Image (cartoon, rainbow, N blue to C red; front, side, top):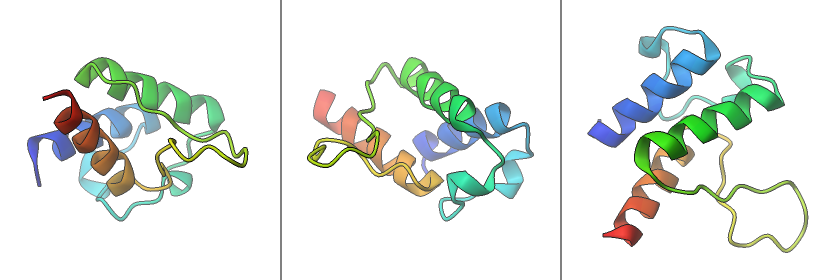
Length: 87
């Protein structure tokens, strides 16, 4: 796992109050017991940790610039993409 992946997992584990060892890229965010506020707090914490802005969909049609944030792996990929775009 990349350093980015490990850091994202650590952040999400802290917000979900679960052991990071129980989370992998395939873990679905809706299986971590996070409510909508917890999900938003997790994304804000990831944004702050990596100095990126993660566009996520509110479910409205036509939001093609939003990332899929349904799984931990999708969030890791989004952060890695945003970091690569910044470089």
